[in-house]
Length: 316
Image 1 (cartoon, rainbow, N blue to C red):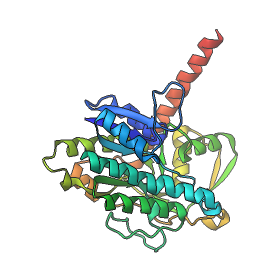
Image 2 (image 1 turned 30 degrees about the vertical axis):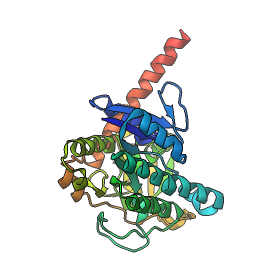
Image 3 (image 1 turned 180 degrees about the vertical axis):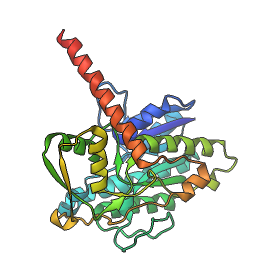
């Protein structure tokens, strides 16, 4: 099967590159940004004609949409950026869904825990729960889900949360740097969720597509699902574990309230996702968040050693 990946140079897109190496399917990695050393086909997912041509020319039967506008705070304070977020997070997924409807393919759409948060709750959010976004970003992602469903295409929407990886900018890499360089940090403890290692999500997507591909009727897998790692923690707990695994014991990490760091948008206070449906439907394995964090940090250290060795060889 020919599979198109959008946003291929982001966190999840890079992890999809890694897991696809063991797949029998043919992957086409696309993005609007080019990165040196990465084979990337240019595709603007806001251009319906370009999407149709790409799908037709390559006989694409599945699209994994890893592309999104994710600058949460900027969406709240800038109307132009809010409009751009709607275009990328809602209109573009509708384009991809339309293309898959026309090609009788399937769209895997990555959504977010930010579709929840306005209503107070302290139990894991289930996939059928009504979306109640607290801000513009969450609303644009919810609109994207709704527009995909309205096309009538075959879709698998996966909401995830607190995504991190070895690639790009993310909380894990930021805290690795700060706990290594700062004597003291204050991190919020009144927002709880579950970190998600992007490599685990990429593995889950491969498992899901294998199931869909083998199914006599792909409609049985159509739906909205949740994926994050197992367990629950606050951002404070997450930071403490990052520092502990990395050996950054000299940094004094203290808990604080969200109110001490005002933000244009209210983050969901409890964004733990109920993953029963994705586990039961696709037999997806979900690792514990600490185990996955250890793997990511080990990979980051390994990558740093390799890069240092390359620089040393160049200097010689």
